[in-house]
Image 1 (cartoon, rainbow, N blue to C red):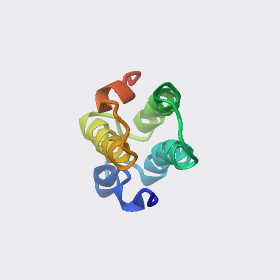
Image 2 (cartoon, helix red, strand yellow):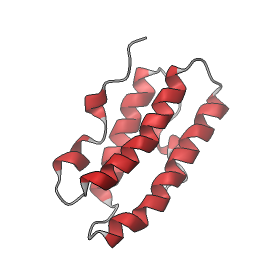
Image 3 (cartoon, one colour):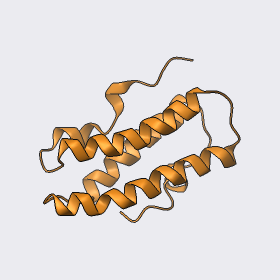
Image 4 (spheres, rainbow, N blue to C red):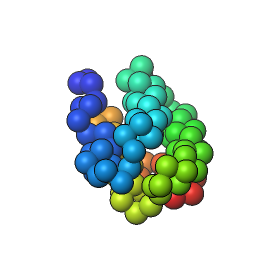
Length: 107
């Protein structure tokens, strides 16, 4: 299987100056961790969901840092993460809905 396309990570967040790149990079690192996990081999849907839950909880924690840096993890950020996750699910042929995968979000 081809590696996940790096250019698909959080596109609209990187394009919008409202989101500090150093914080977007932290969100990306959490997502990359999931992609690396998926690329490492076969996993059960429960294990995959658990990995996405950890990613989502990590993003929840970062929301405060966005606020402290005159930004906010809001609609555009939520959509950007959702689009990135959707690309990941399709790339790896994972049959879980995006909203289910990021079910633990506070954003």
